[in-house]
Image (cartoon, rainbow, N blue to C red):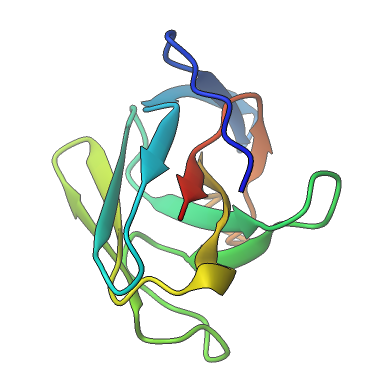
Length: 125
């Protein structure tokens, strides 16, 4: 897949209940097929979500919400965790179809929705 490493750390501005939490994550991550990828994101939120965008301009798919909850249609290879202010997305047994841009966002505690802009986390094979 295409890879555009960035030397700078993207900042993700996430609107949460009218406030903005500044989140940071590394620009790109590469993985071997069948391997494990860990993506971290740090910020000021109490609750994080992870979103997978496979094609630019397509709608992101929620893979983790409320730090470690997984939607029923997301495979168990995706898992989330949080310690202090850092959230982590772990992908085990990486498959070719897992190549995507992964966004981290803070979650609105009432709706579970996060608004994410700027920054990316690209998983490459």
